[in-house]
Length: 291
Image 1: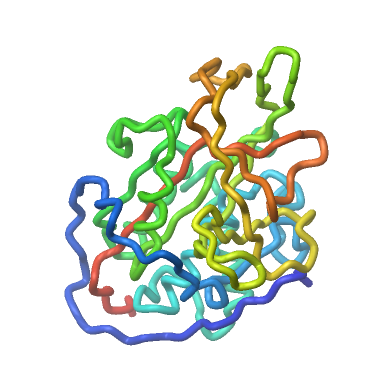
Image 2: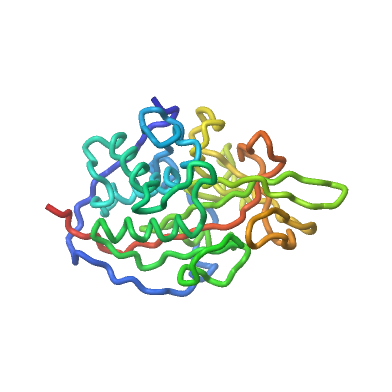
């Protein structure tokens, strides 16, 4: 079984229209968030991508994207958007099924070698939400990774204020972490891979002390052990270059964020850097569950 369990799944029946109108809303104002937010950290589940019970392709090694997104969809399913889950009476099985479905060719089409790119996460998530009878009102990306223009905000560096404003209420967010090797002689960060994690809160450290530089995440990687949450310190990079073979590189590293502190960095990397992020906002009302 997984090192982590699903907690706090509460079904809330909400009456209303079966669809919520989607709008290409502008970026939320940066002042619309509290100094700290921990309301969801114990109710958003934290699935391990290599859990054998999930039966993900290739043991889930490349499925961090579908798994990170499935964490949030399980929370939404338990809070008014129940169609997003196939069966809330058996939440663990439902969670595994969502992750498998998201990674399939029908949705994110996760590659067993390279994982899931930003564009695939955005397009696959949008299709999944609509296939379950809903329409999102906001699904946007910030960062340098390649993505369809309709999901973009024109920001090549993910703004932390935007992220913080994007996880309250019927909203959630995911972080695209790049794994980098650092060369101090050239002040260059060479990208060697990537990873997806679920943003669940911010503003306090692991001891409950206020700290505006902390983002709280659920990381699907098995290297995280039994940690219930990861408290990640976001450190602004002042100089240097990001390099690699990916489209969009090389580029200046100035303004991007190293993810330190509680971040469980891949063994072959020196740093995790925030390459981008996705924010999803659902409507205020949920659809009636399909019969």
